[in-house]
Length: 137
Image (cartoon, rainbow, N blue to C red):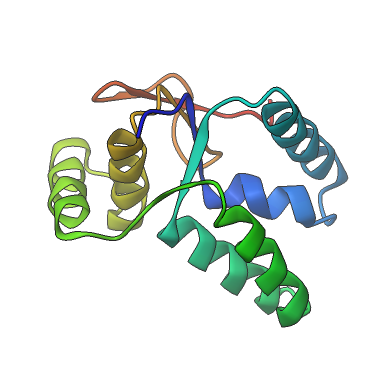
């Protein structure tokens, strides 16, 4: 697998959550542009799990968000594997990030992405060939 962009949970959440209109609009715009231009992009099982749980906790309809997740599962997906776990532990130890962030970074590395679209990490930080980018700014 080799993609240009790996998408973190928060970008997906903002694309559906209207509580912050500016971030909602920017996330939708950036993701729509990504899909319309057929830019190779990936997500991970962790991202889809977190997205589903977050949207349900915000009062979303489980059946609707199941369909959304099913739709995203047609994209490039990084599976949870022993290799990913080892890489995440390496990232965690090297960069001192939370383990959940390390797992996202590791998944982005495994996907071959050059950019990790996220709001949670420092924009411009290079994590072993994957650069964190906040597409909302």
